[in-house]
Image (cartoon, rainbow, N blue to C red; front, side):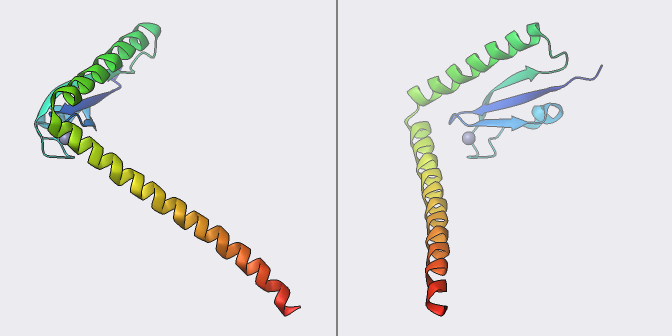
Length: 117
Ligand SMILES: [Zn+2]
């Protein structure tokens, strides 16, 4: 049976990057920030059974606490993550503004229809 799974690399700034298992040997540098990759976490989906599921949940917990620890100890990592969240927030707000503008335009179009009766 072929191996099925996923590998997540964590860099010194706490980024979680999904990488192809077969190339993870090459992954030493974070694709997000250029930081050093500190640890690799492997998730397996080959069998899809309970044992695998439990192991994956454990790995997920380890991954989360590893990242949390980086954020606790590195002010640079915290600054990077805050900047990224600010950027995501801005993009989200921009997209909402566009959606609202689109509603306004549709409402305006319907209102204007009455003038031509
Ligand atoms: Zn990074």
